[in-house]
Amino acid sequence: MRRLFLLALLILHTSPQIANQKGFVGRALASAAQSEGAHRWNELAATGLGFSGSPASKEMQELANAAQEAVGIPFENRVPVRQGSTDGAAAIADFNAIYINPELFAHQDNPHGVKQCDLHHEAVHIKYHDSSCSIFLKLATNLGAPLLTCALQPQGKLKALYPLSLLVGIWAGRLVQRNYMFYCERRADSEGHYATGCYMCVREKAKDIKGTLECAHQIIQRCQETQDLNPDQKKAQAWSHDFIKSKAHYLSVDENEAIAADLEKQRKLCAFHKTAERTS
Ligand SMILES: [Zn+2]
Ligand SMILES: [Zn+2]
Image 1: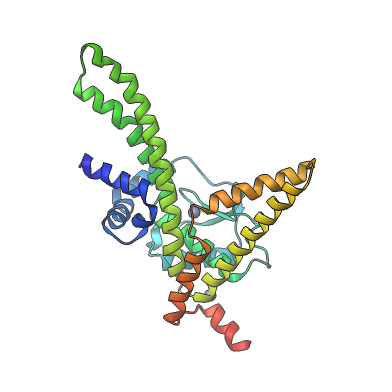
Image 2: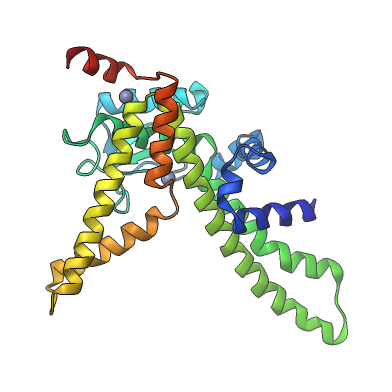
């Protein structure tokens, strides 16, 4: 079992692309994350957490409910949408709610497809209890190495293994949590995009990411050409670097467009874009 876990860890670390395919590792992780045990652990992690912010509009609740239904979350496990702190993201999934940033997400200029892709992405995080599973993996790997050392009961000079195993446990915990998080983001993109059932929605999302990435690169370029940046320029430069770095762990623009092309081949369109197509 331990060998199996280490093998899964190695595959996750060395090739996130492989793990995102619907192979053995992907299926095993998905079924573990949807198990009754994972659901109970998520409830435990959410104990006493409560909600922050305020409830999102009725329209957003309906969109998020439909997204959660589309990704296969049973009615009793669906979570509400709140407007609140999102750490600079348009939307995030917590243990017990999806939080949206009203300025970045719910405004009129945000294309319907971007909202849909983002809500379906967060719904996939909820489906697989990604926040609580990530904490569980970190705890398990942090404690795994010291517990194993205790079980082996090293004697004499080998007692030096105790502090070493503690360090290895902490290192492994960080590594596992980091790579599991990257894996979850790609899974949420891929599964969420397909769950929108609309090539136009995914195409709008791909266009949005492409545009924002181009904008971030332009900001960096301009900042490199400017001497003595003012505080706002420094802030924009830092944001651009963070955005480009964070997007490396999600599906690329090309991968988003490939999903859109696949959905187009299947002639998949949502009700919103069907209406838009008829009236255009
Ligand atoms: Zn995400
Ligand atoms: Zn659509």
